[in-house]
Length: 487
Image (cartoon, rainbow, N blue to C red; front, side):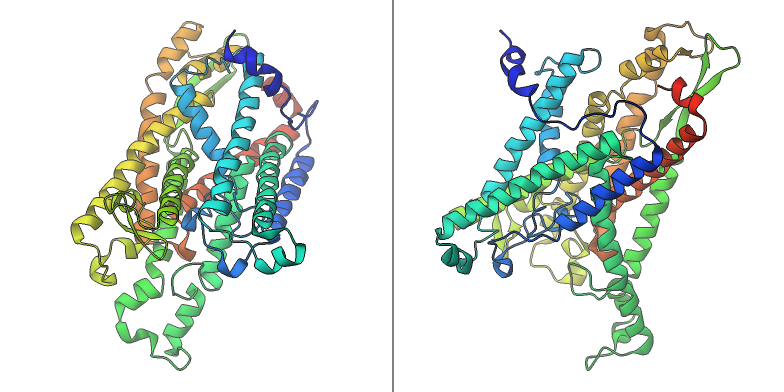
């Protein structure tokens, strides 16, 4: 008896959002999408009951926007458990340890979805429990424990219970948007979190750092006033570029332009319909073929490693120096320092910031971050393509089943697959590596509102794809015959 036979009774009974029986009108999709987004914003402002807000610590730091996490709220875990479960499944699937045929076997598809939900629940526990009980990142409020008479441990379990509910809610909110709305729930939650920080960086004080928002900073620069303090322009060009966030503004605009341009770069494979004479089309293989979403997997893996380091440091009090030394909750040396991603200009501009780390350590950390993001971006892009049925084999079957073929070649799945193998694997690796490089460069130069480079890349790419999907939905609404043709 295989593991599938043993686990099937549990996996097939995992709760799921029912798929629509027929076509969902575009306006109704927008309604579902907007409603879920409003619910997400509402839940990010519902604070955890029993939490000592003043004593709580940022768990994910600048990873919060990527993981759609609401610090101290019921959405504390964000999409972290979903992403971590996806990493585990992709690694198991890539090594062919699951033995599931998710392309052709409906039973295996149901088992895969059930296994993913089960892993998400496990990851909610593995992520949430250390936050509350191990690292004291989310301490219990003694006043609440005294008033309820359940002790500190009781309040801690109450806090974890709320986080567990939030983790389950975001799982099903993502599923509602995927089946009844437009786009991906995970993508929309990321866009929502990053957009908040971008607007905050333009109008008000960013979430991190000591700089004011761009508008206020430039007001001070023009007027030469900073309350009763010194004139802003006293330090010259350095102040304008760094404190005035001119460099961050330039980096943000550059990333927007590069990602939009990269999304438009593609290799188009001509197609023709063997049954309908004159019916032609093209299959685009974009430069960023795997999209930017695999970057979430790389950054989530880094976030989990850093979270593990903080927990070990909190529990041991002082780790061996070769593992890591910490100051104010941040690694300053050892293995966890070298594995920590570069998050801002202050992490590597030693000549400006006057950092205590030797130059060779800073350069080593930058090199490791570049290596992890470029190589990891390529590897996870390949995993993403294979597990989401975007690889040459799955794509060839989809093209063949739609009645299309490549002009000048026989109408055969194997022939189409060989042609696609000339482009898809290479473009996938190049696109994944390019996205990783852009993410690191954006972090190093800084962006508006302290948004991470990965978060900015995700926002631009997801918004662009959402625009394309909305345009396609509107086209289908205007021409129902096209909807029937594409199923």
